[in-house]
Image (cartoon, rainbow, N blue to C red; front, side):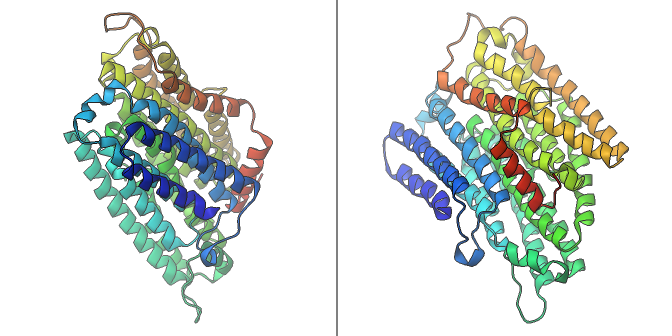
Amino acid sequence: MIAGVILVPIIFGIAVFIIPWQKVRRWLLVIAAGLHLAMVIILFLRPPRPMLGGWLALDVLGLLFLAIVSLLFFVSSVYGFSYLSQSALEQEKSRRDPERLFIACLLVFLATMSLVTVAHHLGLLWVAIEATTLASAPLIFFHRTVPSLEATWKYLLICSVGIALALFGTFFLAAASAVGEGGAPLTLDQLLRMGSRLDVRLLRIAFIFLLVGYGTKMGLAPMHTWLPDAHSEAPSVVSSLLSGVLLNCAFLGILRSYQICAAAGQATFAQSILLIFGILSMLLAAVFILNQPDYKRMLAYSSVEHMGILALGVGLGPTAFFYTLFHALNHSLTKGMLFMSAGNILAVYKTKTSSAISGLVKHLPMTGALWILGFLAITGTPLFGLFVSEFNILGAAVGQERYVVAALFLFLLTAIFIGMGARILPMVQGSPKEEGGKSKECFWMWAAPMALLAMTFILGLHIPAWLHRLLTVSASDLGGMQ
């Protein structure tokens, strides 16, 4: 079944590339996503055995991130079915069959992200994260405009430099584990068992390279510069996946590196570096959000902020691990919903400039409601899941008497709330600038993001027992305390 979550999307991707009928391809996208989600549920009920000598395995931490990938991809595929049919993409119909490559790459993208979650060999993990870059680059370039071309090249070049640094980190990790005559094991289980026998000096160097390398793909500042362009220029269904799940895959790579450091007694060293990157990412995100006229770029900088919160959560240590993972889940749900809503707005208004839009709730009632509720959710307003995680991460900082960190955390959250509110509220309020009354909204294009919003709202009120167990065990694998 581990192989299934990788091979099924690839098989469907090949089929999509061969089949000439557009509508059939769209249905195959949804069917493949549904099958993938069903397989993940089976994996949750029946944990699989490792494969290929431990190179492929699914621990609870990997299962959590695989579930996030599969769930958001399924909802995005339902949204994408309608998105690809809308008039906003009519200009693409003049080119020869643009959806063939687009849908095929989406499915290969799903396969590579699934491989990241089940890769327990650090070399294979590096290959999988690099493969996500190659699979997603054509998706960013879908509109074939000059800005999308620039964003694609920026994405490829910066992430390739980052992944090259991560490769150096993998080499140093291999050197740190090369003790005695046993070679250099790079499977996660072997490295965790070696623990204190790892060379500390080389391990620290390895972690820095891995953090900077995978942190580039994750969008941590100051390595985040590809992210605003890519998220802004990609089709909204792709932006939801880039922000909602691709960044999590890079975060998982960092968590694997942290697990090894913790096993070697270097958790404090790793936490201190993560704490710095976390605060810096939130700070830079706040600066750019405060004066950001493009609402899709604003959402991209919001992703930088939340990646910073994840790094900060791990940096605070075991007491924050549970809610850091919970934050990763809720950010994926909320940001996926917001980018889908942004796609609805862009399809009607044909602009990404916030000031050019007003009266959204009157012109597009469902999308307008999602837009304002999404703003409240992503900024950590009570009754939504992100409030629960942010409040408890703040509590962890206060509990450790890190009052400066707690004060910075609160200040930056407030600044970002003000910055996003200053852009989003005028878009929703007032009278529509376009002539006419309400615009017709495709059911699935608002129902899909509504489903994601409902999930994060429910999680803000109650964490189901099965999810609580999953998060608890995942936090325990990182050394967390619950």
